[in-house]
Length: 369
Image 1 (cartoon, rainbow, N blue to C red):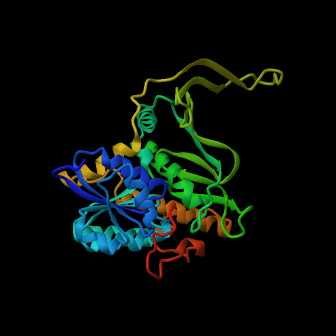
Image 2: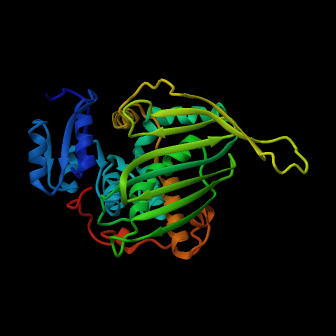
């Protein structure tokens, strides 16, 4: 079905995420034309079986004159050159996470979009997830009491990427969730990472993010080398504890009315326990479940049509990239890295050479996520 009026949107790269965006865009009444931009004609042919009205282009240069907006769903190393090319043509851009592979590149993209007065948005999908909205509301209402710590785990067996390590592949999700839920960005990062199955790309990483306001520490565990698929966020407070399990078909959020407090002063009686424990009910609040990608893509289109600023705009993407770059530097130098070091240009940032593939040459979208 061809829609009479609306935006003309192209999807650059039609791998796993690109094909999902095409499905979602096809359901939006405000989108009239959807274009597949991929050098592999077989991908376009396969998608056209389900969406016959798709237009197909072999590269971005060929497609840009026919588009109002693009969604870039290609490997991270291609994000900056592809986005800058679209922005220069006056085309609105949404980039899948991470926005870029360095903070400097992210800043260049933000400045270019500002100069051309086009929308620049990053695909931090979980910030459009109703369960994550609920976590943020709990923090804002201080429902958990004083926050003690947060912990996230994003684990699975594969998929190994060709141009970025596990930090840049999986950690953007959790960093964006933490920043959104806390309404803040960390002041420093510590990271420990290692590679096992791949000689060049780290496949296991542990990050510790230190926030100042609220004063809390968050731990992030990511892995491509784990036998179990895990998607979990845990928040522990002085009054309650909550777990968000994104793999649960029901009860994605469970609020545990549990806690621990120091026992009254007992003097020299060391036979008494030093702490008292409270065990209450476990409650699963009702969630109006949504499809985050649908909400995200619709928001991108609305921002273009209505002149709104994206909830996950360039600054949002930059904040996550700053954490990733600080984490990479921390892992390489074995020290805590202040985010201000990254913002100031600081010491020479250490980013995997694999992450910078293609950046000094033409952008290729042939190898897709």
